[in-house]
Amino acid sequence: MLNGIPINYYIMLSAVLFIIGVVGVMARRNAIIVFMCIELMLNAVNLLLVAFSTLHNDASGQVFVFFIMAVAAAEVAVGLAILSMVYRNFKSIDIDLLSRIKN
Amino acid sequence: MLGLSITQWLFGILSLMAIMFALMVVFTRSPVNSVLYLVLTFFCIAGHYLLLNAQFLAVVHIVVYAGAIMVLFLFIIMLMNLNADTEPRKHIISRIIAGVVGGMLLFVMVGALKGAEHLQLVQAGTSQIGLVKNLGMVLFNEFLFPFEIASVLLLSALVGAIMIGKRDTSTN
Image (cartoon, rainbow over all chains, first blue to last red):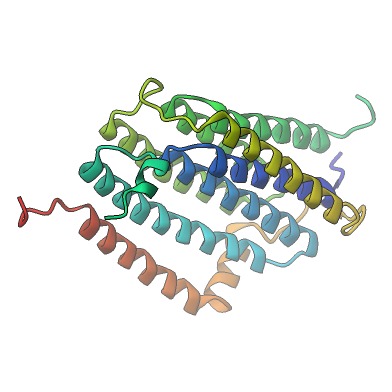
């Protein structure tokens, strides 16, 4: 039998995943890991969008998730290109080190 | 079975696995292991999509995230030759502060969202909107113009990534 799941559970799960992403952005110095934590936050939001789209029986939420995936793919492609260029020039992707290199 | 249905069991197991793997992404030393744990997290989220009967999104999620984006991450990490030994670590105080700030943010969010839409049940498995046919009808009727804009965005990102990543031969 297929019982429903309260929407509160999805809200809590998404909040926890989002906050794990926030902690990862704050606690790690490797720029690639920071990127991955941003992906994690995007996915938490996507999950909540899909849950609410199912709850309200409205397909627009799932279309938005589709667009968010497209934007995330573009963001990752450009971001990783920038990171590889930074690594080529500075031989490091440590964000604390890079924030001190101003000139 | 504690009075829980199969859907609720699946939801609980997938949620626990997703949270556990997400924590491992943040707390593993080696970047390669982080990427692999993130792939596992994405598979758990795809399982959630299947549970919500969003089949198209589940497949797209696995193909785009686990298939394309994570392979890109792995390639970049292997090109840079990163491993746990060269991994820079933040000072212990800033890591503790990050944990405290995250905990406080979680406290605020849980407190603010606790009463939201109380006990409205998501009827998992019965919704028809996530099927490819229905989603395609909405996408190509209501959202045709944003869809075309998204294609332009992807093209410009492609060109931009190639321009940025290209080795500059004129300077050296």
